[in-house]
Image 1 (cartoon, rainbow, N blue to C red):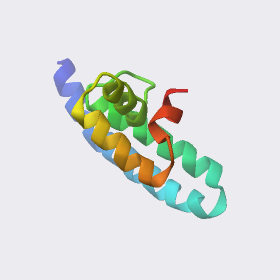
Image 2 (cartoon, rainbow, N blue to C red):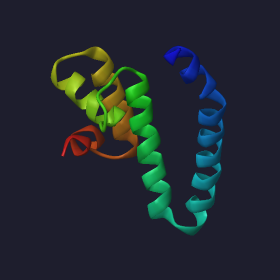
Image 3 (tube, helix red, strand yellow):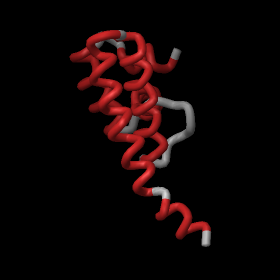
Image 4 (cartoon, helix red, strand yellow):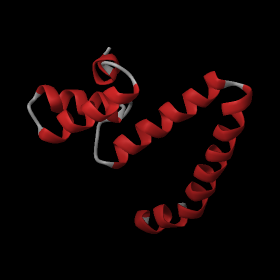
Length: 93
């Protein structure tokens, strides 16, 4: 029964994500602080969806993986450093 309830929520979740995308685009022009907040929350959603810890971003997870010597963490942190120097390290603090 719980599985059916979760499946029934799928249209609501899809609508919510599409709505958040539209609001994000709007705020990208009128309130960048709000747009960054939405982006951060989507980042956390992506991490949880990939079986990560709640309230943790993909960047922080990648930093921990890099520090543990995992290749994917090293690669992702190098890519993110192109956009912001020491991005993964900043995500940990």
